[in-house]
Length: 218
Image 1 (tube, one colour):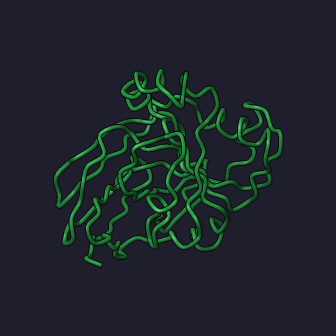
Image 2: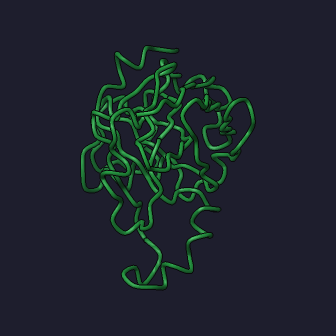
């Protein structure tokens, strides 16, 4: 069953960094350096603040003098409160899925994700409908495609997750309650690209449809 995201996906926006195998592998060398010392052993969490919310067909403002990068991602909408749930119980707490384009400025460090890089106005575009869990039989085998002006610029699959959806919900709910309506942004793959004012940016996820935004100048 599909429902309007404006009705049931109204909570907090939690993002996970480094949740694609290719992205994690590409950064392993720097995790041997200060301040990291070793690769992360828990999900690397960040928050997209309420002002970042944006929608299908809406403009995304490119800050003057900055590089803007889209980030295709699968969003998991929490359907009922989840506190200290197991991996096996996790999907009992999922209402469905949305397409997310997690826009950001480039970041130099995963140690302290920069608020000003992640939390600009309109930097989290979310598709209009929540696609119910009953419609997506294999959420860990979905193809994500990023198109800029009709050309494919990124393509990956949720089969390459470092942590599954169930693992993410279980690990996060160990220390905080995930509330109904929250969206878990399950990560963006390696290979982020720059976009410019005038570009049409589209994210497609198999089974979920497409999300489209146009970049405009500040």
